[in-house]
Structure formats: structure tokens, C-alpha cells
Length: 306
Image 1: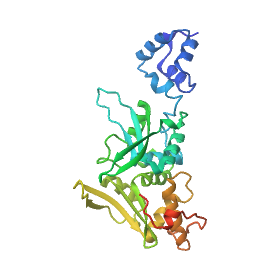
Image 2 (image 1 turned 120 degrees about the vertical axis):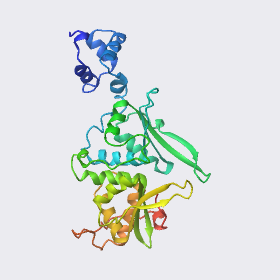
Image 3 (image 1 turned 90 degrees about the horizontal axis):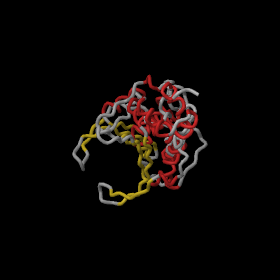
Image 4 (image 1 turned 60 degrees about the vertical axis):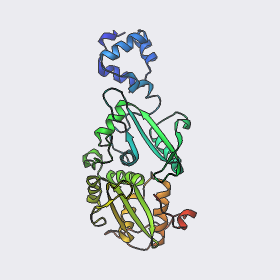
């Protein structure tokens, strides 16, 4: 049996992560008490909560490599609707959270499943808040708390207090170039709007000027410029991209066609309005919209999807 003092930091992290052992398992394996083991972890600068106890709840390493559609999508979604808490140097706040209107509760469930979270759905918080207009709004929120996960997101550009400083990520973070479109779809599902405009599809996306310029690079023919406007409530300058008709069809087709993860009501809006004009050519490759779509009651009535 190897002496505890001779166990390296790398070996200890391997026990906690690759083997997925809890402290009691490691203490038995090494023949020491849990208190002794905790002291050694402190010497090695390892926060065991980041690796063992929390690993049993969800996958804290899921964003270490953006190499799949779902990872790219959820990164984009967190860019839009995620909250990476600030660490003030006093309070060790490693919380990453997302909060949506209760009508999108099932999307929160999708994210929880993606995280590999085995905890009951009761950990999703449901609350009421007041909107800027003074109306009550029912919300659903999901939190995870882990320093490794938090730092991974920050390294990927999903930073704390991001609303005014968010930048489009470098393409190099994606294992394959096309994953950038899954990332953009995630962002659009969070901070974009698909709507009916004279029986055609319209798309608008809000964000910082720098971030929207990043999206525009991937759709230079569809988004001609980043528009600015003044928020009537806060008087702050806001930025958005927008297009409609054929150009919106082209953007939506690229983002949503053949995708496996999306916000259901936005995909329904895309699918329905695409069905209305399925015979139109989309893009230079002559691609057309899939005729196999479903029209929901709310979409048939032309309601805007926010």
C-alpha cells in the first residue's frame, strides 16, 4: 500500500475523477482516516468537493472540450441565458445557473440531463418574479456549483457580468468548425426571437456589438449590419441583428435543420413558417425546407416566440 505522503496530486485527482471514488473509498484504499486524507488534499491544493462529492451529482468536466453538438449548443445557450457568478475574493461563489420562463421548464430538464445530473427534478427552483411592467412571471431555475466547471466556462468566454462585455468566442475552441452553428443556435434560443412577419419568418438576435459582429461573420449575406436602438425603459443602447423572408429562411435552415437539440417552441416556429414556403430555394446549394413539420395552435395564430 502506497503511503499517503507519496501520493502525488495527479494520482489523487485520478482517484477522484477517473475512478470516481468518494473520500470514504479513498481513505479505505489508502488505509487512513478521512480527516488525514482531507489534510493531504489541502496540502495538494485540491478541493475535494470539486471532484468527488459533486461528481456523483453531475459532470463537472462536460465543457472541457467542445467536441459535440450538444456541448456547443449548451455553451451558446449559457452565453445567452447563463449566469456565471462573480468571485469577490471573499466568498467562494462557484455557482453557474440558468433561469427561464416556466413555459420552458422542459428545456431546463434537457440541460439538467445534459449535465448528467442524477438529482431529482425538485432541485429545479420555481419562483415568481415581477417584470419591468409590474406583472408576475413564473420562472424555473437550475444551479450547479463547482469551481472547475465555472472556470471552464470562463476560459471559453462565458464570463461573469457578461451582458455588456460579451465577445464571440474564437473558432479554435470548437473541435470542428461546423459546431459554431450549434453554438449560435444555442445563443438564438436564449437571446433570439423567431416571429411571423407577413406569413414569413423573421429573426432578430440581441447582444453586445462585438458578439453580434461575430455571428454576422457566419451569415454575411443575411445580416447586413448590427443595428443599435435605445431601450425606452432604461435609455441604454442595445444592439441587434435582424432579417426576414428568404434571408431568415436561410439562417434558420442552417441553424435548425438536422439539429437534435433546440428550444422546442422556436423549432416549431421555424418548422411551420418553413413549411409555408418549402418550395423556395435556400442558399446557393438549392437546399429546401423539410415538408415534414407540425403546426401547433399557438404558431397557427401567429404568436411571436421570444
